[in-house]
Each structure stands twice: as C-alpha cells, then as structure tokens.
Image (cartoon, rainbow, N blue to C red):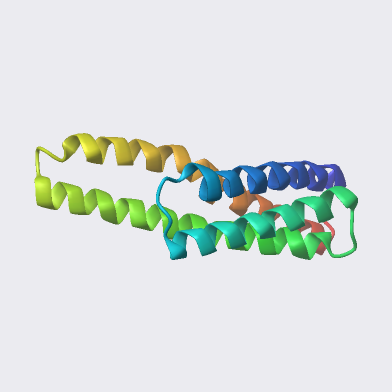
Length: 133
C-alpha cells in the first residue's frame, strides 16, 4: 500500500513539475531572476523525484523527500510574499486596496493545499516509509 502511494506521489510530482515549469517560464509575463531561479529549480527537483518514484529507483525516497522539502520552502516563500503584499496594499491604499487584498487572500487560500499541505503529507509519507511502519 505504501509503495503504491509512492507511485501516486511520483505522478503528482511529475505533473506538478511540468505545470510549475510551464507557469514560471511561459505564462508569467515579466522575467525576474529570483522567481525564474526558484521556480526552475523547484520544477526540476519535482520532475526528477517524480521520474524516480515512478521508476522505483533506489534513491526515489530521498528524491521525494528533497522535492517535498524544496516545494515546502518554495511555498513558504511564495505565501509569505503574497501575505506581505496583502499587508502593504491594505496599509497604503486602505479601503481602495480592499479589492486587491480580497483577490490576494483568495489566491493564498487556493495555494495553501498545493504549496503547504501536499509537501507536508508527502514528507510524512516518506518518513513513515523510512521507519517501516
């Protein structure tokens, strides 16, 4: 059962890596080195772990842990940046900035499952797999 769950995480990581790479390199209208580097590294780590987990490589568990850790760090950076932007908009524009704060708050709510919950569940799975329980 746990091995099958690893294959599911492999497929999810593979799809997530492709989606993140396309979003970072093709969809975003402006280029910014920090965003490009963080997004590309995250995408490549997710792709590598996804392929390793699907192929049942001997190093797949470590790759999955690394991908989940990188995704968790990436997610924390993105969410903290958005939350700081919400505070800035509300502080500078007050009532006028409420529309922007509402949109960004919705964005945070939509991103939390993918950028925080998924990597935490994945890390818990790989920890359980490593302990053999």
